Length: 338
Image (cartoon, one colour):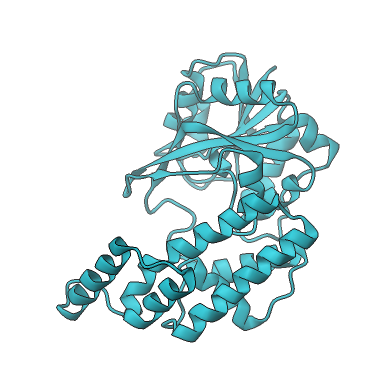
């Protein structure tokens, strides 16, 4: 068996048939689908049982184990050379498995790969992920390098290193913690085209949660994984850099954030979490992307950002002037959300 497709399922009855069909009707045929029902309380299991295809195996968990437990049960059941993940409310594009299997076939040093993601439902936009191992390694400190629901892993790597999810991890963000462990033993890459359609809506597990609280916990765990000492202020600054604001940023905050980023670059050069050039470029991407979020907090922090960037591009100055005018007229958000 070349590819096992693991689909954990919990209360996704309206969507799971479309998810499974998107795999079974794709261009890749040497596969099995392992659907793990995590003791759903809706009709998910009944929907799965109505699918008449010998390539589908259904695992019924005797009790609800959560995303980590369901994923682990699936990893242990999969028999393919490669294990692909798909969320039960998403849709695989027809040539997804073929593209990813080709990448892994051609690059034996890559142990896990993903691809680009197209959102649909309540949002309609692309999610981009870095293509190369170097860029993926640099991404790990800031976010996931691969979309979990678009991922494919070598089963030999999973088994050789006992890679599993920890049931103690939070139900949101467990993928980031898993990729940290994968990244310690193998390399990542992504194909440069969309491989899944990611459904956005109220059924998502992240809906209704406190994103800032989730990210605070996860970022602390990531810092500890890399052995990065940090203070509460530095953690808050790092989250500001990820556009999570618990308070309005000041000019001093922007200066301190730049100092924090420079320190991370130096630490990476000393400790080698990621290739130097790729990591420095990822830090600058994070820094540059912050500018447009600062405009809502007044001109001062945005101008301080430009000063520290040692650049005064006309498009950014124009954006800042227009945003502040619209904020003054009540046409754009001003400060923290009410």
